[in-house]
Structure formats: C-alpha cells, structure tokens
Amino acid sequence: MSNHSVESEYLKDDSLTSTSSSKETIAEKTENITSNISLKADRAIDKSYSTDVENTETDDIKTYGLSKPKRVIITGITKND
Amino acid sequence: MIKVTKEITGRINQGDIYRDIEYIESVEIANKEIKISKIIFPLVIVLTQDCDLQQDSAYRIEDTETPNSDNRKLFSIIVAPLYNEEMFLAGEHLNDDETITMKMAGIPKFGKKKKITSQYNNLVKNETPRYHHLAFPDDIDIVDSVIDFKHYFTINIDNLMKDKNEKFVCKISELYRENVSQRFAFFLSRIGLPNQ
Image (cartoon, rainbow over all chains, first blue to last red; front, top):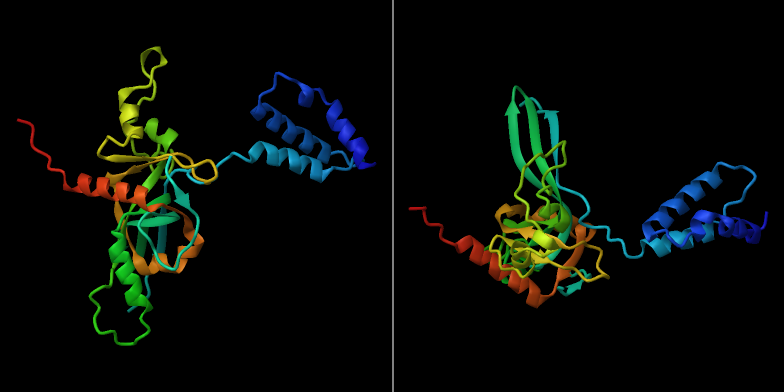
C-alpha cells in the first residue's frame, strides 16, 4: 500500500476532520487511530505522518516539574566488623 | 517572567536548577540491618552565595596535593525545592498518596465572581516572604514553579559535582537569582514574636 493511500485513509476519518474537537481531543484521537491501525496486519503505518502530528501537538508541553517529590526507603544488611 | 540560560559551566552556581536531588531523611542501624529513608525532589535551586561557590571551585581546581589552606572549602550547599505551581496552589505538592502524604495549605487562585485572589497576587508578585514564584519562559522546559524557603536543606557538594552535568537543568540569570537570594536571606532572618 502506498503512503498516499494511507494518508487518504487518515483524512477520511471523521474524528480528525471534526471542527469541534479541541487540540487535546485531536491528539488523543490521533493516538487511538494510530494504535488501531497497528493491529491491522495488512495496513502500512506512515510513521512520518503520525510523528509530524505528534510533534505539532507536543511542542509546547513542558517536561520538568510535572512530578511530586517521593520518599524512597532502602534497606540492607551491614557487614560484620 | 524570569530569564534563564541552559549553558553548563564548570562549577556550581547560585541559581542553578538541578533535577532528582536526594535528601537523606534518616539512617537507622539496628541488629545489623540498615534502613535509609530519603526524599527525591524533582527540582531544586541552589541558594548558597555565589562568591562562596566560586571560592570553593577555585580551591578544587588548584592542582596541588597539599594546598596552602583549606579555608575556602565548602562541605555542602544550600538548596530549596521547586514545586509545580498548580499542585502547590491545591496544597497537593507533597502528597503522592503513597510515599509522602503531607497536608499543605493551598492558596486559592480565584475567589468570588472568579476574581484573582489577593493571596495569589501576592504570591506571583513575590510579596509572600516564605515563597518565591518562578514563571519560566516558554522555551524553557520547566512549568511555572514555587520555591518554599522553609523546606531548604543541604546536600554534599562532592556528590553534586559528580552528577552535575547529568542533573543540570538550567540557570537563573544574575539579576533574578540575586532577588531569590535576597528574599531567602530575609526569610531566614525574620524575627517571630510570640502572640500576646
């Protein structure tokens, strides 16, 4: 299957063309569509297309400061003196 | 919005922000068993005076087995944690429902009629002595954060030097870091009088 026909399949998907979808919703739906396609053995995944979509949606997401402090407890046995 | 640089220098600077820094809470040894409790903070900022850090760095760089004096050596550096602003406002920044369950006082952002509260305004204007708000530029990978001066702690400088390049995130520019330093010093030097 050529890349052009795979891209056409994406464009025909109603969820991607819906004008009422928020950016976050489109990203989620894109991810769902990508995962669904991966299950179909006879369809080629256009990785460059899906990667471009992901980059557009995640450019403004910050990665530091998203988690909370956490406590870790380590136990062990001391050596004999 | 503060100014920040991602350039790594050869030494630790005041205003440096490091990730995943460990604070040793306790070490217990009993019946040949050792138990270490530590807290890993996602982000901390260096508060030690930069002149002290510069002198310590010069001392370490001197390539002599027996330096004339160890007078400039530092044992540890002072840091304070940065908390995610949203989690901080909700009072949830030290509660992961599993390993740490501290109940912290939140700060409401909106009041009646969805107006910004005076407490939130004071926070972002850095008029609340205990906290320092940092709004990072869009091109810096850190969310808006709040420093809690009350939670300062020290870390061994030798350990940080080993992991410095790996754990370095960014550095606050001089003017802004001096503001943080001055407010931290003011917080430490405040005099609390008893209620009469």
